[in-house]
Amino acid sequence: MTGQFESKSIANLLARNFDSIREAYLVLDREGSYLEFACTNDEVFQNAPPAKLIEDLDGMPFEIGTGSESKSRLLSLQYAYLLTRYAEKAASENHLEKALIVLAEASYYSGFAQGMGKILNQQNNRPDSSLGASHAAKSKAAQQSAPVKKRLLELLEGQASEEKCKSITTALRKFEHQLAECIQKHELRLKPENLPLRVVDWCQSDVTFKEQLGRFVTLKN
Image (cartoon, rainbow, N blue to C red; front, side):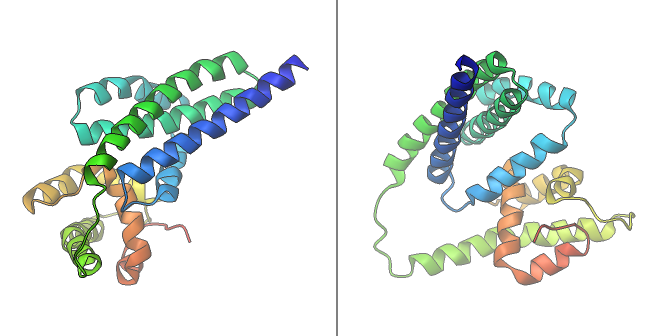
């Protein structure tokens, strides 16, 4: 009975932490897709070798503490999500004590992201009285994405391999430096660390880009 109670308690904590992460994300990245954020990080968690995943997780608190405010927000949320998945896996393997320890760390960082999100929400939560605000936002988004879309397709076109990249994340990892240079050159308000999510969003909103990207990358339907 005690084991069943502990398992149920951990399941409740896992669900609560995922809810906290989702709520924080919706505040911190209003133009993004939480589903794609979750899918991208699930892909990282599932595909990374265990030793590499642990190494990356161990290094993330340092990056969170030394990065810019915007990078800290993103990394704290990503760190919390990956830790929660790690705790979920430990619980499924009946390592309940380990799951609780990892969950405590995940809860701290999801709370950290939530706190930053509330501050940001208070600063930005003002009504937009412009009738053309929606159209202007879409035009601005297109201006921000066009150079990166073009550069990414050029880089993929120029690679020698005939085999498709297995995922968007894999494709972007190959050209992260070139794409970061493109963002800097055009003075775009895009964050290189957000590109996997942005590219997924562009595929949903730009059919032509999705078709072109699909020539080089295996895309999920």
